[in-house]
Length: 274
Length: 244
Ligand SMILES: Nc1ncnc2c1ncn2[C@@H]1O[C@H](COP(=O)(O)OP(=O)(O)O)[C@@H](O)[C@H]1O
Ligand SMILES: [Mg+2]
Image (cartoon, rainbow over all chains, first blue to last red; front, side):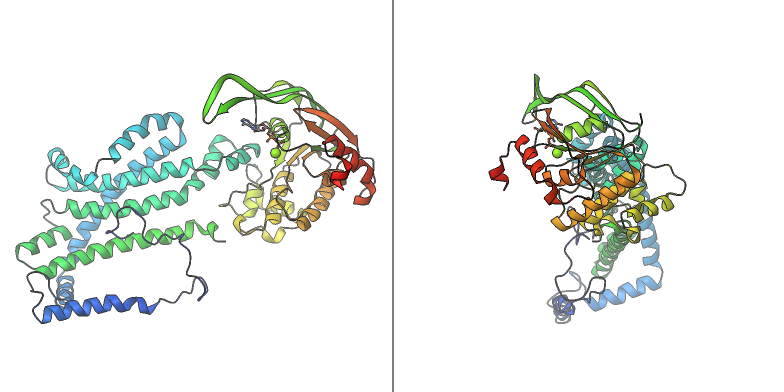
């Protein structure tokens, strides 16, 4: 999912395919859908060129493009990208591991649910981005509060969806597995966990979106490297072109990880194709 | 003896629930002293109105519902086919067939079983791509591949269209003749029961209230059991005029 959407999944894979027209798998992109975005960019360029939109409020698309290119060439963009991706990867892995383990524990065992679910449900009502002040007090202003924020953002969606996915398992299938002689372990491996995969993947996409969003907020705090640093630095010098480049890179990164999950989804959920 | 089923005074009660609240101390008696003996290799059809406890009896025999009073004994190897095929949609057809089996050459075993229900070519298909009749045949193959001494069928043709159902009748009869498991077929279709079974028993209000031996040559025709049909329908509380 893209960074800008927080709750719902953008364009879920399960959404209805376009009616009629091209056969599935070989959909031609509808070129007409590009008309209005293109017009908006042209309008933006025109506004900048005529001075209606001053450079210190928002740079023109052409300037943004040129700046982006030069930042990429002199290596600044690459370095920032590596640092920010690294933060998301580390924080996401920690958060996903925590959400995953807790989701499994509370999904698979009654006592696990009784013990784990209530505190998690209470904590998730806290807006996790609001935890920054606490994280700064706990972890200082280095890398740790940023990673903690990303981890917190990723852990909750994954926990909630994994837990829900496991609980949704069709009891009729479990019963069938039981009369077919499956042990408890086999029922979990062959019935419960596969049944939870679609919902868990939804959780994964939401978690990734939340991770990027948390990173953007976290990098506002005293970043000395990364895309957030690039943006904050540019703000000091009124370089709106660099700010826009940074935002675009954030968006691209979010879209990339989302596309990755969707590729995994297509492969793992092959069986859903009718 | 392998394959024999013996049920003596079986009683099954469920707690009475209003909404989600269970009323303590109140029980609803669904099976009220069922007596049933089935010989090894015998094909028995269990008829009864909806809600008469047919599925409950079958589930008890399958070991899915413990907590009963009275006694029953079933063979060690019991297989069940339900009204819904209950295939795991994320396992290919052949992997569904051998689910829970500990055979080394599962693929070979599965293919042989699928060939018996004439579905060998769908071994690698995903279950969601099967038609209702095909899925039910996979479910049948999955039950038979375990070489059961007792095969429990809970309205396995109930959700199929009429033509598919006819083909399934022939298939089940043929497989039963080849493998000779004891069969208990739950159905509410009198014709189906008389077409397939050696004996038809009627469950009503938690007890077996009637039993008819169907002493006719196979394969049977509907015209050959008109009188018996009237008698069984009468046991089910349907008189001749209504049935005609
Ligand atoms: N788990 C259960 N809890 C409470 N009541 C049940 C349960 N299973 C079945 N019953 C009740 O037992 C009766 C018989 O059900 P069933 O055996 O499914 O009938 P059928 O003959 O249609 O297969 C029904 O009234 C049903 O509501
Ligand atoms: Mg039933």
